Image (cartoon, rainbow, N blue to C red; front, side, top):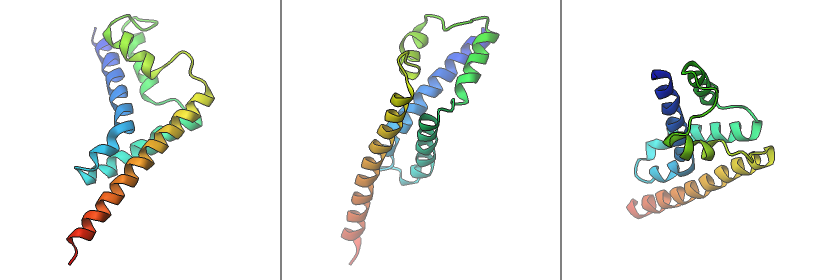
Length: 127
């Protein structure tokens, strides 16, 4: 039972990480030091998507599922709603490249705005 809980927890963690990579730059407007956490997460995500590597969370999740006696995902809330988002059936290398580029583009835009706002604030505070 606890292995199933660990596997489901990893799916949630994985989902939150993906969300953080996509929208985490927005948090940097309020907490600028968050950049030092967010940028490595973005770099990791782009590397995983464009290299074809597998995120270490995925095999660990599968290990816990196997230890729980499940050979496939159960049809519970987490598996039904979150797993198709993280592991779509139609995922191809070209789509992975597109996703990696989309992550890069979104974050370049967010950080461009952040840089512009920061520069404007600095300019307004200088005598």
